[in-house]
Length: 242
Image (cartoon, rainbow, N blue to C red; front, side):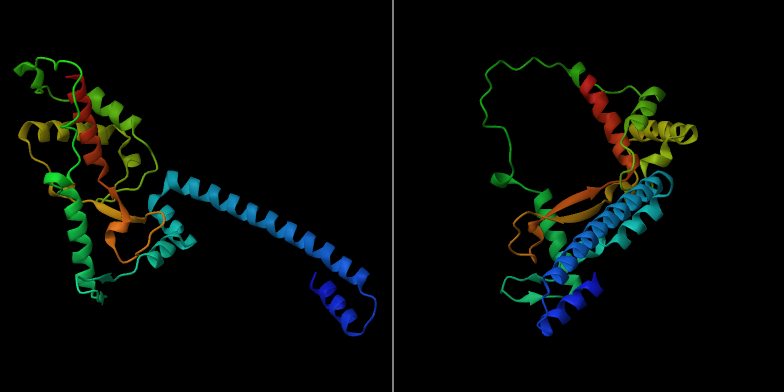
């Protein structure tokens, strides 16, 4: 293609009829573009298959390769480590930026008063059911089958939380026995580990974002520990049945 392009340009400079040279160049460029697109599709398909295999075998290598693709770096470029203070000045101090993100997301979590969205003013068309004290009792311990089914019905290949333990590694007999005993002990004592109070929040830019320095223009995707989510699923299932 490059040689055909050079011949075509030389023909124009020497005032020689270059219709055939141009036609040759266009046809070769069309073939080149077709081969480039085919190579791209083959490359992305091969990469996709490799990532699928790594997601099933080694989560750490999987996420490292995801970072090498450029997705993580691209997201970082979209999120500037600075914000606009109350006086309209742009601050890039890392401590102030982190505090700004923390305070804004904390305010979203702790909405009170008129800011909170509730359904209290929605009229009820039917009479509420008469509830007794026994309707609120949830004292039975978790069955082994409940823990087993919850673990095996959970989605695979999801990102892990602060403990870096995905749900995939919990799908074995020893882990299920341990989780069954741990969940029952936590349910009996009402105590939870401090790690369950920590999550990883990944900010995702919203559509049509106008101000990139405003933390509230990003959706926070929370990554919680897998054991915590399993425990909550079992509790939710028990409460739904009662």
